Image: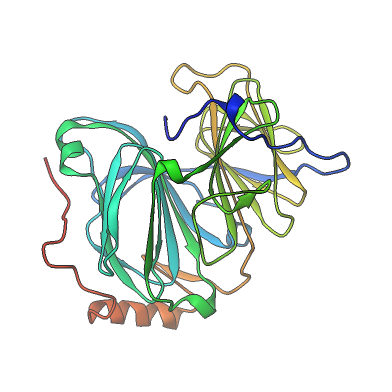
Length: 322
């Protein structure tokens, strides 16, 4: 899992917590079930079984891979619609290509991210390039769905391509953890991603036996998802392993500690820290649409069928099958 790496001893540091501040406690820990998405690439459904109110403003998250593809095996999605939310895609290993009906598109690779605001409606595709399909190789990423407030659900679609080099890098107070701020502001450091809802997204690599305390806005919820490795999370050291999601309660910072010994294949604890200001609005999600009511979803389906969410561009990229 290379993502973006750096020498933590040369990076700005996150200060140790101030006396009297509180580490957030863990409310629940759930294990993400495995499934398949799109043309058949393996995913873990990170939010399965979690109370939707605890996730707000997030709606859905897939951990794509980690998988070592053979020749001809990589898969993506075909063209499909969205309305009413934003997608955030973060690729730690491998390459994806994106194209949408609003003119957005590009390559996501090795630590790169993209934001797509579906807003009023868009068609898009995400698929491995022909070169990856033909060669095979390692693939690992995250796709997160971020809800839009009712007042912004019909914004014009937009797209933000962000390279791995755009990510803000800092380290823990003792240098034992590399912290990649992908979006939002954490400990005075701001990541490149810009969303319509106030959020923070962080990817931290915590060395064996190391600990990190990350300041977290008191009006944000807090989620910790372990991508791989093992360790503990929260004020009371709740165990967490790869593929598990911890929902945290109130407090001033998030505490994560890596176990002193890790498996050979996962030499560190890799975690995503997610949080945002809850919208506290009704959510009706169906397939690729996230709206406030059933009637709005039915209208989205009708608009898609009538071609009002966009059309596939002439000469568009298509999934490549080896």
